[in-house]
Image (cartoon, rainbow, N blue to C red):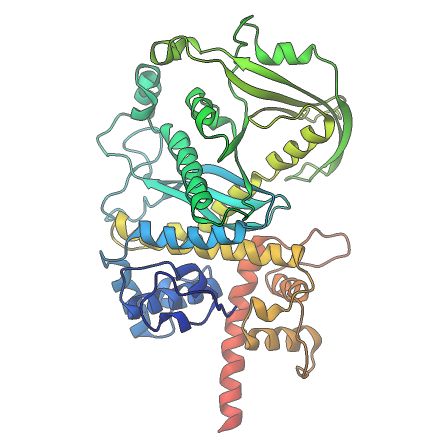
Length: 489
């Protein structure tokens, strides 16, 4: 995609840098023009062959050497690189009523690269697998379109630090700021702070989206809800409940109290197939109510008699599950009111989008092959990961474009030669003058290259068949370009 956006943050002459990668790097300042161009080339090359190693994806031996040197260059600041992509992400968020900030944590295993400096244990014991962790936040539209990475935090544990068992024993003796789980609160506050920055920077009549952080049971942390009291205007929360929290006045467990309330509605949903489990229909009973949470006993010495937390409790429970199937049962805590069935169903749809962060992390590991990087140090791996995160988002955005903008021209996402190759491969005819394929057609053809069978009742192509298909498309396109050169000679 050729971008014509402003050149804020770039040096002289960099505003003309072509390619979709430029849009993600346009806010990257402090680097020489040649280094920014090298980054843009690396992004384009890595996205064209997501599963390729750096030497494979580079266009020459010199280009591979330049890529390794750039990843070792201390002037390439991970924070600046992530900030540039984040600015582009916020730009894509404008115009949306609601943006879901889905968050989760994953680990990268580099045990087989035992000479890598700076990594640490990622398992239960200090002698376990070695690597580092990533806590990331992916921005999604309500329809599930991937808009970009809003926040990313990486860390490696000390090799001589406490084991997992010791950390579990100590967790209630320490304030949250001294524990790894503090990442949930610090990430939430970082997203809320950036929303406030955008509110101050944009014109008064600019409509900013309502940002909602969506997360799984691990984020059911009392301190997160306390922080939400101050920042809900900038970022709401929707958390799947883990703990049996109690009401402030009666001390009754929230979910026992909610179970006694009248049902709002019964709805039917389709539960997708997973592994050997077939697709099925499920009848869900919906309930919701406003609640005031009391301070948990293990938090009393940190918070004392603090103000009760006002949230909404949401429950969706399957009434009659088939034999052998575990009934669906979602318990959510939200800072957004939902007094009727429509509001509850909307927030359930929001939570259902959370699986996209797992797709994002799987794309990083299997699609971009992050765990196979041999770069010698944690800092170099972090720099490579910052680029891989942009590539992983790009793969998901390509998937989403086919679903959300099916009639858009494929040339907005792919090179002209790639489109020509796809047309010839799919139709067995020479490309004709005029409009090329739509993005929906192109994505299905790429997916077919990656093993997608494209049967009548098959779901739309996912990220996995796309990253496999793109690898084949790259080789076919390079051959196509060479044949054109031979034909001209």
